[in-house]
Length: 285
Image (cartoon, rainbow, N blue to C red):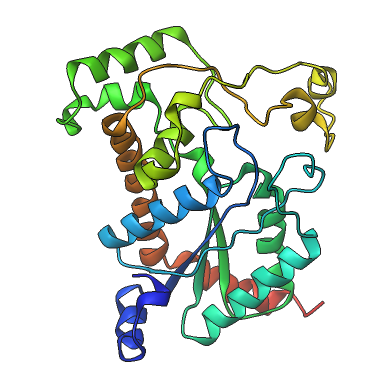
């Protein structure tokens, strides 16, 4: 159920069928090479949320397009908001979700750069005693790899022999699949095929420059490491053969994962009980 598509008289039933769970998709607007749209991270995570909510009813809040992108202004089209402002937007969205009757809020994240910010937001929400509980789930953790598809190939009868060969070749090659790569492109191809230029997938290099690898070896975080190592905003090896059928299989795996998260959060009761006991033991700060 999409929040913006519900009528006023449908809202009470939506809260009941969702067991008070609302999902807030978030991504960012940034470069993913030249073959994908700038809002790739928002589009695929919102698509997965919508389809998963059809399997496991929850209410999906309007997506947030503004993610953590500090320091990436050299890429045309990138939208950069201060983290403090994004946190304010998140807090106000959660307040409105809660005010309208939801107590559990799942932030479904499509952009890896948001991870630390969102985890911090979830923890900091405890100090405000807002009454709602925030959970963070990341699309980057979903296993939608070609090897996973091959293990369950019978679940995707529409895949052709040629498609299976593409997946087998990819798996055998041990190619890297990260930012703007095979899976992310597949998700967008299923969600918005009109915006994906598969023919341009290999136009830019996804190879790392390794310029900042020494920082990583020493477990030193630097805000420049990823961007310096990936000047074309790609982190992947090019591979041919991606098409709408393979993209559909990738999406079905993602949606299965998301629906499982929705079902778990809807039916677990430990978080609310623990929250109540925690609040009783921890004075307001």
